Amino acid sequence: MHLINIIVTYDINHPARGEAAIFLDKFLPMNDFNFNPLRKILVPTDFSENAEHALSYAAMLASKLRSKLVLLHSIKVPIVAMNEMVAEVPEPQLTKEANLQLEKLKNKIRARQLPVEVETISSMGFAVEEIISFCDERKSDLIVMGTRGAHGLSEVLLGSNTAEVISKAACPVLAVPYDAPVNGIRKILFATNYNDNDFRSIFLLTEIFKPWNPEFIIVHAEDSHHPRMENSAFEHFKEQVVSGIPYDKYYFNLLDGGDVESAVNDFASSNQVDLISVSKRKRNFFERMIGTSLSKRLAYHTHIPLLVFQGA
Image (cartoon, rainbow, N blue to C red; front, side, top):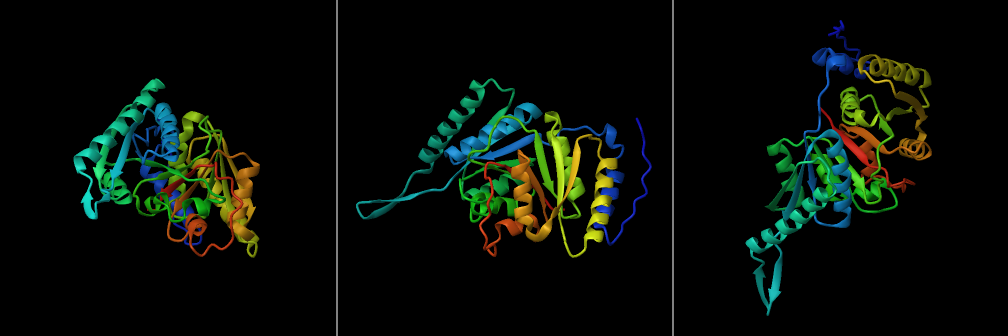
């Protein structure tokens, strides 16, 4: 066992450095710190093609990481008109139909002979509320949800259950577009804004995807009005990541931040990135992308999944 002595300091001008030092101090020695951060993956489903594709993506992760998959379907009781009378469809009938559908999905995973434990659960209620409640009560480590096709990431997420779950969930959420390839992960992009929890998110991101041995590309869209300050802050952050997290395929790029979303999108597209990740804290990069104030349509390749870590 190799021990590392770290002096925990906090520089008000570079909060990410303080967060990095505190995180290192808490989990040392990191070279011996090996664990599975995704023991239980929650996959909500409405039995649509998008949801089934997200399940395939989740199964890929679970089989590699030896995680348990939990399929959750939330049943909203419909009201139907019968000869001018209003009647509810019986709950037992809806539950039975949902359980049959869930069992079919479970059998599809079994047919692929993946080494994955699968649990199925149906519940009565509104989807987002049930997902959040289940995640909190059953301690899910990740939620994987599908997104519909659209012209840009903001359009994919805005107003969807996925966006609402991302905003409310206590655990990370992976949004999987309907046409995202399920064939391995070679390049992962993390967009940092030096948030307090970015270092922790990069560490967890590395631990999750280390079995794929991917390249991790860490980018920041710089403020063109303060280039020297931006370069200094980025170099400090780079130093903390490289020296603090034992992995040898980190790459760093400082992007022109005139238009943050376009800069990240263009970089991801031109570098054939398989997954984008961000940390959500207050009104950061992710929230600007899906915010209602966004007037410009994003020229974004929606086949790239988005993994959002929650702020501390």
